[in-house]
Length: 138
Ligand code: 5GP
Ligand code: ZN
Image (tube, rainbow, N blue to C red; front, side, top):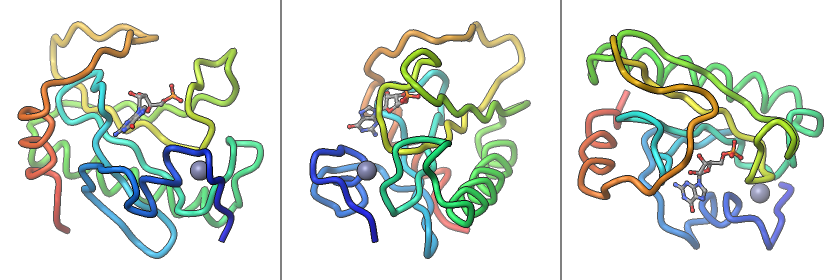
């Protein structure tokens, strides 16, 4: 499997960096974004390193899309979200900052103030942990 030793998301896959994991399957893992745009914001990534949408293996892309849908369903059912944004940024000009392919799964709440692009700011660890507990498990 492709690994980039300098990639923070590869380190999260390997467990070398901590993350709040909320879902996994053979090809993907999902974990909470450290700077959530809204309560429950998660990221789905393939286990294999690929820089971006142009480089990701088609089977990994399929698996990541299915995983994102799985998480979106949980956000609606468990977090009380009213909608979900799936966002992928491909290239620095498109706001990509971590160059390991990922899909943002961002729960949306009626009347929430989120505008795109959001400005990342560290979330409160206790609030991220609580949302992770609600999203974990099938
Ligand atoms: P991008 O800007 O590439 O579309 O998204 C990268 C996302 O990764 C950002 O929303 C950022 O908050 C998140 N992120 C960056 N570093 C870490 C980290 O070490 N752990 C977690 N959980 N999220 C991270
Ligand atoms: Zn990587």
